[in-house]
Image 1 (cartoon, rainbow, N blue to C red):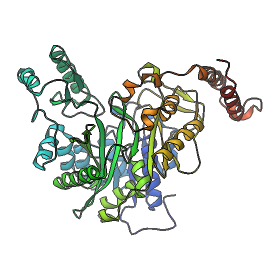
Image 2: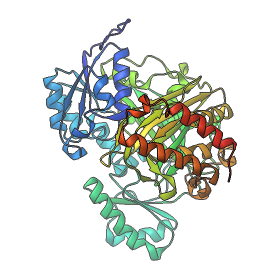
Image 3: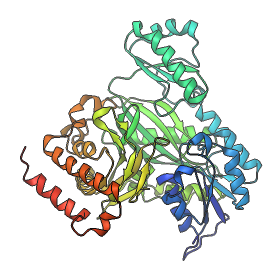
Image 4: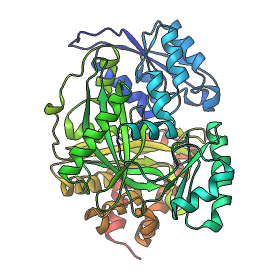
Amino acid sequence: MGSSLYKEVFMYKKILVANRGEIAIRVIRACKELGVKTVAVYSDADKGSLHVNMADEAYNIGGPLPSESYLIGENIIKVAKKAKCDGIHPGYGFLSENAEFAENCIKNKIDFIGPSAEAIRLMGDKITSREIAKSAKVPLVPGTEGEVNDEEAVSVAEEIGFPLMIKASAGGGGKGMRLVHQMSDFENSLKMAKSEAKSAFNNDAVFIERFIQEPRHIEIQVLGDKKGNVVHLFERECSIQRRHQKVVEEAPSPGVSKKTRETMGEIAVKLAKKVSYVGAGTVEFIMDQKENFYFLEMNTRVQVEHPITEMITGIDIVKEMIKVSAGEPLSFKQKDVSINGHAIECRICAEDPENNFIPTPGTAYYTKSPQGPGVRDDSSLFNGYKVTTFYDPMLSKLIVWGKDRNDAINRMARALDEYIVLGLKTNLGFLNRLMREKDFISGKLDTGFIDKHKKLLKTPKENLLISSIAGIISLHTASDTKNIERDPRFTPWKYIARRSSVSRNSMF
């Protein structure tokens, strides 16, 4: 374990992965291919998780709540020192954008595999990052220059005009964010945004900016090294969202022209260089339907959706992160990067699209991921996998590549047809219907897409019987999960055959 047939010239001997789930597995795999040993950490709830079994070593770091385990930086550093690690990869979420944690890693002579603490601090605060973007002449959405206080908020809102967005300065993931359409709703929305920001980030600072009608969410992937080199890997379209959180991403964007792509990429590189950025990062923009774009924020970490960029460029972003952190230069230059084909990612989640995408904890008694040409499933799923209320309900990321966008959509639809998760209510049906929606196929996208196509959230009548059968199977396997393998009268393959038969001979 922890070795490869071809050992690259490399300084890291052992890396601790300070995360869980599919991103921990993704980092572990990259380390193995580089010949680097890995250390996993896990909470009480994750004792039997896949990332724990894949690493060379694994250590328990506390209770099931993130605040009892994955968010306690000092305990993670203690494990890293005990295991004699020379690097820590934070993945995304948890401590990945925590400047203090990055600093403490360095103080303990362990490399933080990501940008400097200063870059995290500068770009992690939305107000500060806007000021830096402005100094770099990056286009900004009209709004406040910094934090707005309660006394001046109303007059500022009147000046900016409606509709407008109230955003938490230290925010992310849609927390502390409110869309306001009229002045009569403003003060209450401001109060709610500040309260949510305080609860989520222990910081109630907010700013206000104009709301762009029917916007697209476009982001540029950047990579930087310690030699001052920064490149971009083109854009990703991230407009399909629910509750301001991404559901489907694709690269390249069907709404971005070659000229806009080049301009966005140049601006993203310029901004990253402004803060001497090292590692993987993403510069996010909001773009109107005429391709006018404005800076939103910079995420100083690897993104959930990084695989689609890997698929169209052939560049392993996680490996590059590790190598540049170790002091190596980027293995390519901007002129070497080109777009090949089209890639789409669907986030497979244990959630109920018909009920405002509410998480649906439970046990996945049987799973089968799709295979075939151009299909990649970044997953932490296995038979018996338990989804708890402690963590994000994402189960896996299904990624496909096609020679063009239509090819990728057709491949994703086929792959979603093959995906089976028994025992949990998931968003698989919704995603499958989305791939067949004419407005999605035509590339007519904006961040309000799901709200405009609420029919996609409803399970068609012809699929209700299939869902009932799955429920019965779940109850059967719940009493004895081994039956799914032992009882020849009841197998997943017979279930698949029955599902196929029901689909073709629907009585509804």
